[in-house]
Image 1 (spheres, rainbow, N blue to C red):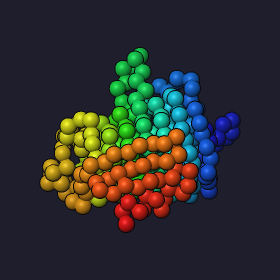
Image 2: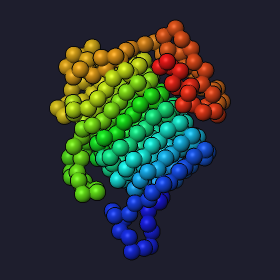
Image 3: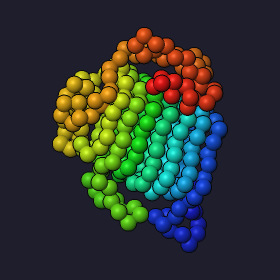
Length: 275
């Protein structure tokens, strides 16, 4: 998990620099269901600085997140990853407790389901990209399809968590030029001092799928634009998709169809959607 283990360095003060996880393949991990203890994902590291997770393939995570960057990540990039078929209490992608220069871009998430623990009655999870106790996180040009929760959710925790000497503000989130469809909700934000624009939305499983947590309010795209000035360049489209043997994603947006090879570099293929 990337923690310091049995050493003189306290967990809260540890930092790992120049970590690269690239081109790895993770299949059918997290088969033990102890996700209520939090520390469960196919790929999970802590306290990353000047580090990158790139071009990894994750499929069939049974009780956990696909990729999780945990606590006090700084100048961290998560890009070009494919995460399919996760069952989780948080999200297919998870960034936790981070406040400085974290970018999550050009990733593809398909089929993120909720792992509901009946003992905790926790009706959450199944999100595409989930953050908690964060600020200054950018989600740009990702594809989130088939999520039982939100495509993107930035969750606010009112209890102070002063990692790295400072707590969270619930601000400075950027959600830009993502494709989100076949999800219960599209985007959930903690409050309005954030940036949202250029996203392409398809179907949602709940009405008013654009959500604000403080104060609680639910919106369609028209009122998201009117009330907050969000997504002035965003739009709703008819979106359909199919997965072929988890190798090809056929994605139709409006009148255009894109065949994305999930075994190749997905970054230029996603960029082509916004060209």
